Length: 80
Image 1 (cartoon, rainbow, N blue to C red):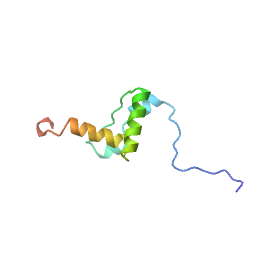
Image 2 (cartoon, one colour; image 1 turned 90 degrees about the vertical axis):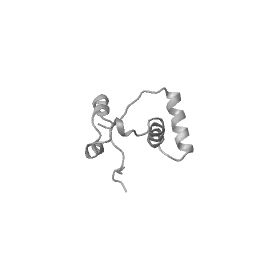
Image 3 (cartoon, rainbow, N blue to C red; image 1 turned 90 degrees about the horizontal axis):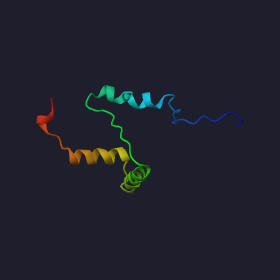
Image 4 (cartoon, rainbow, N blue to C red; image 1 turned 45 degrees about the horizontal axis):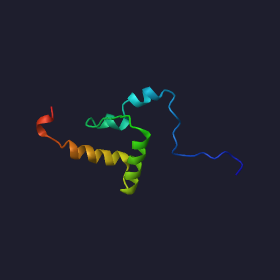
């Protein structure tokens, strides 16, 4: 066991974070009804979101999706 251990599942940091954030999500390409939404929040709010999601045993993304679905329910007239 003198060889270097390779950790699987960890991605390297993007060289250009702005381009990475603006790049389309690869999974969104296959589903044309999804899009990435990026928002700026304070560190305190981010911490509150993470704690609330952890307490509910869900991800922050799933919690925010549910919140947005409640606040903005599907309206057939809004669909082009």
